[in-house]
Amino acid sequence: MTVIADLHIHSRHSQATSPQMDLPALADGARRKGIDLLGTGDCTHPEWLRTLSDGLSKSSAGIYQHGDASFMITGEVSLVWRHDGKGRRVHLVLLVPSLDAAWKIREALACRGNLDYDGRPMLGLSAADFCEIIWAQSEETLIIPAHVWTPWYAIFGAKSGFDSIEACFGNYADRIYAIETGLSSDPPMNRRVSALDSLRLLSCSDAHSPAKLAREATLFDVKNLTFESIARALKTGDGYAGTLEFYPQEGKYHYDGHRSCGISWSPKQTEAADGICPVCGKSLTIGVLHRVEALADREAPELGGVPYRSLIPLAEIISQATGRGVNTKTVGTAYDAMLERHGAELDILLERSLDALAPGTSDRVLEGIAKMRAGDIHIEPGYDGVYGVVEIPFSERGEKAQLTLL
Image (cartoon, rainbow, N blue to C red; front, side):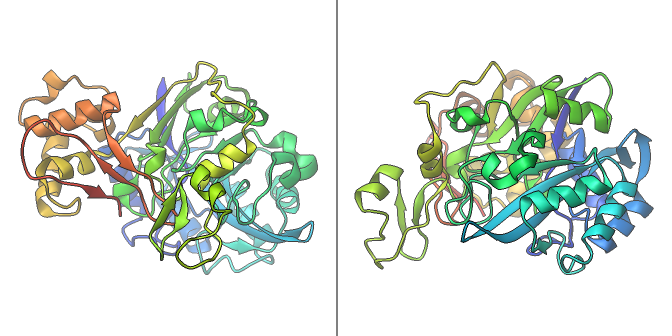
């Protein structure tokens, strides 16, 4: 069976997250998006754990149900420590085999930080010490470096990261089986670094609101949907079937730059200026593409036959086609009508033929889907916390709708 999984999200208990991120909304979002397996997020937060314990029923080994939606227990933590005289800040995703294991992990971490304050807690632990604590409670739990290239809180981030898995995790490096690529990179970028060849690439939405679910996802091909089957796929590649990707240029840290100064540069431009902003004279924020270039030992990627597909969310295609804002009633009504008529969003974007989608769908929306599938788009890369701007070059005359992701 093919499983579309979005395993890194957040609940309403994380900072800067929509209050709508509760179990009913997540279950409804999974149905509307076409997600077969959704992470719960925030599995170290006590109130959210109580909600999960009350609101989920176990359907198979390590997989839980709320309504028709399937969930895996997941979470994210922020580690802050000093290593070799430098401050390090790394985010990690946890895939946990059961609610019981999550409660044990929560108790073991309770003395290490304020777990009540944020669904993604900040802990004063090294990556190796964190692994030791987690695996003492639950050996089956998978620990996955999150959005690995972003500047501020990531294992390879320019501001506070490392140059290798081994430097970060020490003796536990051989138990890191996968990395989350993040919105600002995709498989071809990651596969330019041969040191990552043995690792599976996990793509997730990191959603803070229901609308952002499945903007990235990971595909599995497994006989039965269990925690063990997903874990085995990430460990060995058996059952790992690829990813659905955000166009990486849209990510808010793809290029180098300075948001306050309006500077957005490629790595070559940054190097030519010795990394200094020409407006304020301070150091630029070094983005994902630059860090990939720094660690890459290949000019071209080696993908190994694992597929990936890049997409633009349906609401954003409708927004450009209609010239209306992505959060307007016009776009929302059209989006709901398409789902009512044609099914889940990912099926509309990636699987259904244009002929099948034609009834009730405007020619411009159909053209937008076709151009998205063909990669016929223009993107101004994101930088220093500013999302990229994507423009679909419609052939018909009409109101131009340039979309800025929010």
